Image (cartoon, rainbow over all chains, first blue to last red):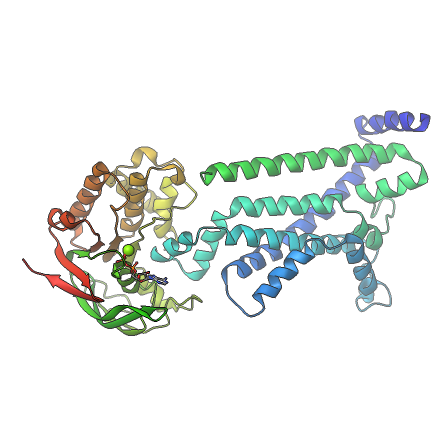
Amino acid sequence: MDSITEGIRKAFLLIFSLDTELLGIIFLSLKVSGIALVIATITGLPIGALVGLKRFPLRRVTISLMNTFMGLPPVVVGLFLYLILSRSGPFGFMGLLYTPSAMVIAQSILAFPIVASLSHSAIVNVDPIIKQASMTLGATPFQVTLNMMREARYGIISGVIAAFGRVMAEVGAILVVGGNIAGYTRVMTTTIALETDKGNFELAIALGVILLMISLIINMVLHLIQRKGMVKSGI
Amino acid sequence: MSLVLSLTDIWKSYNGKPVLKDCSYSFGAGIYVLMGPNGSGKSTFLRICTLLENPDEGKINYFSDTHLSLPLLRGELKWGVFSENNIFKKRDIELKRRITLLLPRVGVFNTTVFKNAAYGLKIRGMGHDEIEKKVNTVLEFVGLSHKKNHNAIMLSSGETQRLGIARAMVIEPEALFLDEPTASVDQENTEIIENIILNMKEENGSTVIIATHDTSQAERLVGRVLIMQNGKIIEKTF
Ligand SMILES: Nc1ncnc2c1ncn2[C@@H]1O[C@H](COP(=O)(O)OP(=O)(O)O)[C@@H](O)[C@H]1O
Ligand SMILES: [Mg+2]
C-alpha cells in the first residue's frame, strides 16, 4: 500500500515538474500515433469513399474485410510485422525493427480499417438525393464524390478520432515491433506496461493519468462532433 | 436563341413496365408546363431530358446558336452517359452543364444557404468575387438574402424550394427543368415561386420546363401546356 501512495505522490511530482523523460515519452506517443493517423486517413478515407460510392467486383468482401480488420488484435499485427521486418524476414534489410518507423507502420495498419470502415458507413448514410442534386448542377464524378464526403464530414471526423483513440491506447503492436527502448521507442502504453511489471509505479501512474486525460479529451471532442453533426442534419 | 432540345422516339420502362412509349417532343425558348397524373412519367421524362438517366431507346439532340465556342454546338448525344456506374465523358459534362433540373426533393447540402447557391459556380471553377456577386443577386431574386449565412437544412419547405431554384438559376442554364416545384409548399410560396419563374422568362428568355399537377398553374405561367398521356407528350391547344 505504501508503495502505491508513494507512487501516486511521485507521479504527480513528475507531471508538475514537467519531467523531461516523461515529456519525451508523451511526445513520442503523440508523434507515432499522429503520423500513423495521417497515413491511415490518407489511405483509408479514399478507400472508404470508393467502397461507399462505386460498384466493383468483390465490393461486399472488401466491406466485410474492413469491418473485420477494425477489430484486429494489436499484438497479432505486431507479430506479423515482426516477422516481415526481422532480420530474416522479407523486409529485414530495411532495418526497421525496433524503430519508431516500425511503430508508425504498426499503428497505421491498426488505424486504417477504422478510418476506412467508419468513413465508408458515414458516406453510405448520406442521402442519395445529394448525389443526384450534385449531378443536376453539373458536378463531375469526382466532384460528386467530394460533395458526398463533405456531407459525411462529421461521421468521417468521428472515425478519424476513434482511430486515434484506439492507437493511442494500444500496447501490443508497438511493444512487439518497437521494443520499448528507453529514450528511443518508449511510448506511454509500453512504458506503463513494463514499469508496472518492474514495480516502478511512479512513471507508470504519471503516464496512466495523462493517457486517461488524453482519452477523455478524445471522447469529449468525439461527442461534440457527433452532436454537432446531429444538430446540423436536423435530427 | 437558347438551347433547343429535341427528343425522338424515346422509350423507357422500369422492370418491364413501360413508362415512356415512343415519346417525342422539341423544346425551344419559353415556358412549358408539363402536366399529367401521378405516375404518368413526368419525372422520368425530365430525368431523361437532363441526362440523369438514359432512355432504353431513342435519341436526344441539342442545338444551340449562342454558344459557338463550345465543342457541342450542334452536338448529338449518344447513350452511356449517366449510367449507374457514372461512366461519362468530358464532353457530356460540358453539355450537361448547360441544362439543369430541380428535383422534387431539392436535396440541400448540409452547409450555408450561400454555399448551397454557390455550388454550381464553384464546381465550374469560377472566381470568388464573381461567385459572391452572382450568388448575392440570385438570393436577392428568390428572397433569401437575409438567410444567406443560415444552414440550409433549417429552411422551411417553401424556402428550400426557393433555394433550389436559386441554386439552379445561378448557373444560368439554357434550359431549366423544374419537377413539381410547388407541390410541397404553401399558397404564399407557390405565388413567390411562380413569380420567380415569370421574371426569369422576362429577364433572359430561357427555356423553362415545369412538371406539375396543379392545373391552374399553366394559366398563371402563360406557358405552353403539355400533357403526359400513355407514355407520350401531347401538346394541348386551346
Ligand atoms: N427508378 C425507378 N424504378 C422503378 N420504377 C420507377 C422508377 N422511376 C419511376 N418509376 C415508375 O415509373 C412510373 C412513372 O413515374 P414518374 O416518372 O415518377 O411519374 P410522375 O412524375 O408523372 O409522377 C411510375 O409507375 C413509377 O413507379
Ligand atoms: Mg414526379
